[in-house]
Length: 137
Image 1 (cartoon, helix red, strand yellow):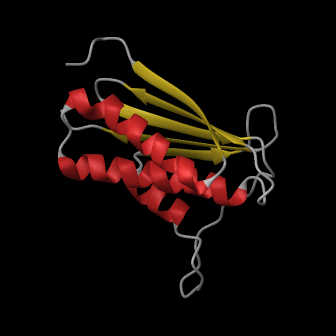
Image 2 (tube, one colour; image 1 turned 45 degrees about the horizontal axis):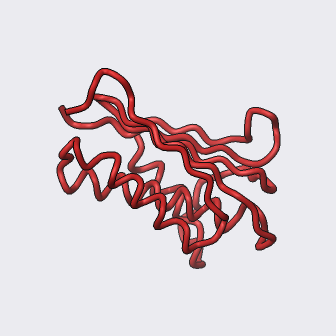
């Protein structure tokens, strides 16, 4: 199946909604040989879609830019890193009773991830979201 070495895919996509599907397709191609249960694959696809959509929606305020995505598959986990050079943000919990169309993306990622880091890029500009999903044996 998977060699002892990790499989990694790196993508730089325009911060536009129509490019989020490119990340989903790359993810499917990366994990296909692993033969994940359909429920696990659906959870991973949902989490990466929400994380990328969050960057698309909030990073550049409609001004355009690039989102860097790294997908890393190893024997027991898959890790995602979504990085932008946009405005950055301070994520907070969604408030019960809050209305509006947006705001659930990070809540969904939190619920599906086994590990989650949200903050600014290492150089201080933009945002960085990294999450890990442990895979069934």
